[in-house]
Amino acid sequence: MPTSAARSPSAPPLVVLRGVSVDVERTPVLRAVDFEVSPGEVVGLAGSNGSGKSTLLSVLATLRKPRGGAASVLGAELGTPKCAEVRPRIALLGHVPALYAQLTLAENLRFLSRLLGRREEDADAALEAVGLAGAVDRRAEQCSQGMRRRADLARALLVEPSLLLLDEAHTGLDRHSAGLVDELVGRVRERRGAAVVVSHERDRLEALVDRVAEVVGGRVVEPVGEQR
Image (tube, rainbow, N blue to C red; front, side):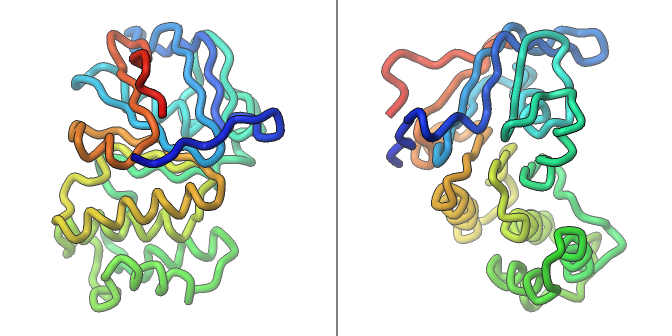
């Protein structure tokens, strides 16, 4: 089991949610959520389908403004213009890989590289790191689900996020490729960033994270003694 990040006054949390409530199409999804993630920490999120895990990730990605409560991510209060400043430091890997279907894998990653002010060679290196060096000229729509998943991991490698958000990132990956998720999380941890990982595979989740929180009825519950 990984060792959790040491908390100290000199290392404030990267994520702080206090009493956060979120409605989706007027339906309450999250209710009075308290949640905190420290630098160097990896937190797992478990829960049944529809419990609010993906909605919580969208809040952490600064893509959804809470209806109530207070929240800050990477020092930006949600709902303020500062969110636009920190968003490039956040990588969200959702159920559908964030790729342009008509572009090749290389074109997808090089486009992102230009947006980040990085070199095209950095995009090529990221694709090579996930085992896609031989498929860089293939359009995303022509790639298998596993290949698109790996390209999405390459995207996160290129971003070098301070906050990594993974929503069932292991889905669609074979046993060998699944290790890329662990490597990505490890790189974020080494940079004193943080990661929040959603997974239905409890054994795999517990092997990767420092603690597991349950999303139950729109609330985040951390079992006593769970944190390590």
